[in-house]
Length: 291
Image (cartoon, rainbow, N blue to C red; front, side, top):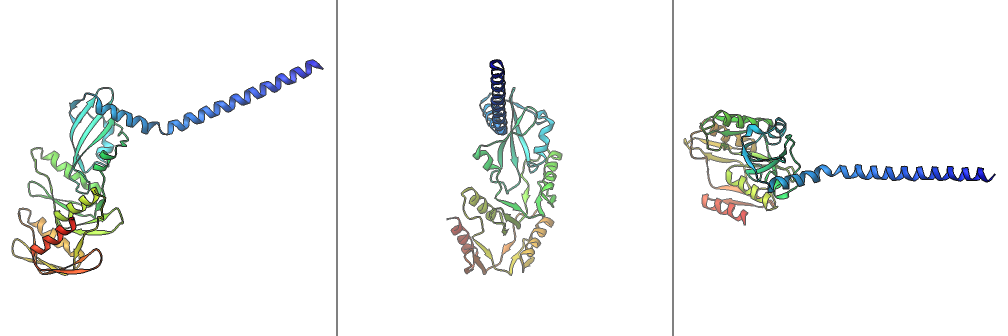
């Protein structure tokens, strides 16, 4: 009888031991899996810091692994590689320059592993340089340094500009965006018509300063522009601004822009209107928006 009781106690102890062991093992595996969920981000951050602090050698862009093409021809299709630096045993620091004016900064850095995987960069300052607070409404046009024009019908066409520069390696001038252009603000989805580079710069500055990205005022249509060849273009609806863009595409060597004919009425964000009588008042109105 005593022996039977001892065997039963031993059996119970064994079952308890294996149950506890299984529980501990499961907990360890769960913890390990949970830790691994964030390990890529953490490892990428550490690796980027190591690449930044390491001594680096500048190498040719052709030295980049094939796998980097998915990024350079994807999200960065609107950019071209300026320099490539290799940190031995760690990875690559790639400096890029963009011709996409919707990005907050022209120049930024991206990092890749030795295998060519883009590293997840959590540095807010670097990420902000590539940030876009608006998207262009396609099509948009560019005048190239040889006075040819390139039309982008979708974001996939940014590579056309990159291809042009690869075919013209001696060109050092940037492509000229043809205005007016429509942009969609990512903040609220509204569409704005930008009639010149000044209005585009104002929106970009608002992005950087986290201010209202909407235009301070818009022209009340119809308005008329006198072009450099003395012809006139009347814009009666927003879609009519494309007539100005088409004129500039057809006259790529024109050094002047179409002149807005005054007086014009403008409508401010709050719905109020005012009459602007000449260029001086128009510039003063734009300056007041920057304050």
